[in-house]
Length: 232
Length: 269
Image (cartoon, rainbow over all chains, first blue to last red; front, side, top):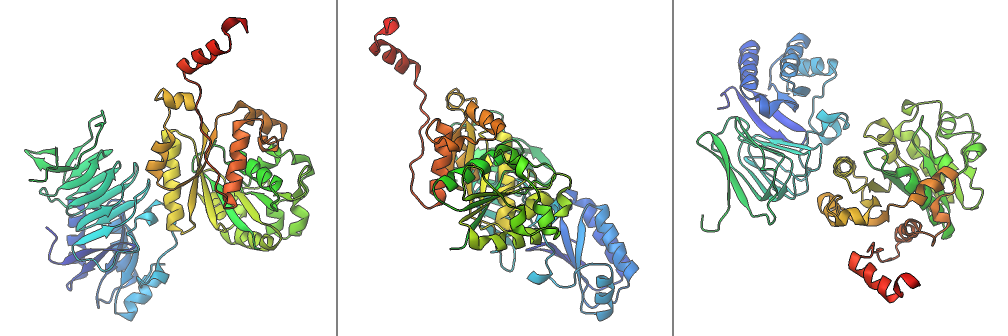
């Protein structure tokens, strides 16, 4: 579903979008179309853009920032191997390097869009070993595994599946880039809200007295949750 | 030994941060510790009133930061305990007058002369909270057994973990055992399960706390007159590394009361 001209991966400070070579205008158009198609995944996030060896001026970079801002995404860094581009990026007060020292101080809710320190280079999956607390957002284009709880007020948004080895009380959104086949599994699935691709469900109001592991998926255009049985 | 700086915070307002700070300050000083309590709620100061020291304030925290006085001049010695000091907040300024670095500097210059620096944080997660936790070696999270207070506490714990200001320890304040029993209030175990941090103490609801605050004579001064006063002293002891068992808040059940009534000789006694 991701257009060929761009790649997306999760990094510690949010998302890194790499634009392939080609003219700037059409590239931005493709990015804009992709953001429009997947608002749930990007909204409220922070993005670093890797523009490769392109030579860009201030207005061109500002156009990218404005495009992202239009989709409620904050551009905080632009990576380039071209010194002219780097200078223009710094001129705009943006970061040119993803190193830990370059990470902006945590300020405002957007800055808390974070991935765990322990997360190394990411391929397809992200494993987080801690409890996600109210106000924390975890966003990753691939699959997410949380070893810990997802507390009320926390959000987990994945392009792929979400597995929680713990209690889910917050909001979880699997298949947020449009993957209808994504699933959500948890030892105790009692989220504030459950989303898979474009579907939304909430937990039944009565709490189950004894929680059982469950798996949620889309079936006949609705989200259904079923107890997980070992013989499955 | 250099002092430990502990910030008392909560996210939500009105859960008892200032009450806990005042009472812990008193309890620690009564147990022989050298204590300074810092009111970090610039613009909305209360700690001085609760300690009954309002009329002794000459300079304040912002005067120190802006160089209008020496740190020692701004410190108010408690009228009852010679080892308890208050560094009051400015009332006529707001939180923009203090930067995190200022609090770190002030705390560092107090470390040599004290055993404990207790910082009473403002409510919220903005500037005031940020500078209040900046110098902390540890954080005490105060919450009430209510869903909203616990939610805010969880948010604050997340921020503290992100800033690596831990370990955060939990104080549950204003527990009403009879309401828990009726299922109208979260139980201690529910709160601890959700927040998953160490429980440092539980303070039961006690009307005497309010009266004591209004009189400027924190309840911890009369250690054994109430369960709340006892709870504050227990927390103070745990902060010094002592292993103190938790109070149990068993209110007598209906049957137990009938039994006691019968044993006491009934109406006649």
